[in-house]
Image 1 (cartoon, rainbow over the protein chains, first blue to last red):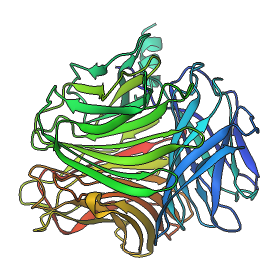
Image 2: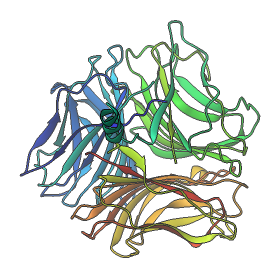
Image 3: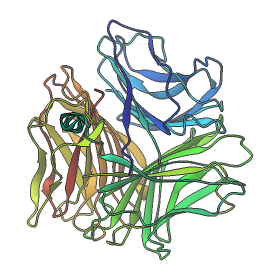
Image 4: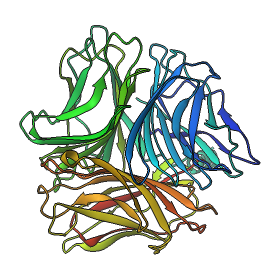
Length: 160
Length: 182
Length: 168
């Protein structure tokens, strides 16, 4: 059986970037797995992603989180980015699965789970475009920069 | 020449523990179910990664193992629907609920996503426990859930079937099976 | 280097049980660690907790936990003991073991260690635990050992697999 789960790209923040973009993503895989371990200098904030440089209101998502005292669900509609996890002053763990990212028939659905020191969250997001994804931009919901040393790793999984 | 061959062998990279077994993509007209059959027993864990949609009203793609349709399954769920965070359960049932969520056909181009993990699928000392993350968002509706499923049988898993509870699984729905060595 | 590969061999609990499953001497050459764990405990109850230690330490942990307990509802709590999830106890449905995945990014780095745990415990009754853990180990040392343990012994056939994920 063909081996898969391949490294596509990696970035470790040198300095304090406001975002990071994986570009020229090959269309030869089936799913993408994005692992982000990031911090910001201020406090708990959302980690968002955009595809193909699309900054229009073509994103939406449904989330479920626990913050140590309550379980809460919320939704975002016609947004300019997709919720994909968390970041705060400590380090976070975010795992984003973008399924069938190169399929030109379907809109793109991503399911993610993320956590920082404040909460654990899982999200399903939708990008209303049938374009194959060739770039992913990762940024902070509140416009904060990522701390030096934040890491961004992209992997591809190819179905037989 | 011989030295060149040996050099090539020495440079061949070790392979991942993660391998693709097979993929099913639903064709035109849809399908009432999809199945993975004759699953090799050479891995330790299985993972299914899927996108799915209904040919009609929204429904569930429910999962059975080794063609067992007896009341040998249990299911539990933790979900968020935007307005509500909740939990659900069903026991002694004939399948595992919603391994794929089949999105209403009237919502153009939107497919759900699922990732299903089965650990120790060939272990004949254990019933089989599934863990799966499923979600769809429809820009104003949708749900994300982490689910568990139990098959009360110690047999090694050789067949996995996902069946639409109503209507059919729509064209372009895709289910990919992976094996993880251990 | 392969991207997703097993490190060492599976740790399988034998007859008589074991206080913990331990991975030691973990090489620092990967980027992330992924542990797949299927477990059952000796406690005379339907379910109970398991926890983790890093580098044999059970201190400096903090976590936010989201859980659903089937018919018992959904909630969230905080933890400082290294809680990783709830698994089957000895009076749960026979032959049933939990299904858990622990993910530790940048485990060999020089910052505090964030980790995630997704865990399900099944039981043919209304209540069974599904948990998502946001974990933090506030130590900057590279992780070279991971233990999974409960308040009672892990039962025979409990098994854990360690994988390394490499971005090299």
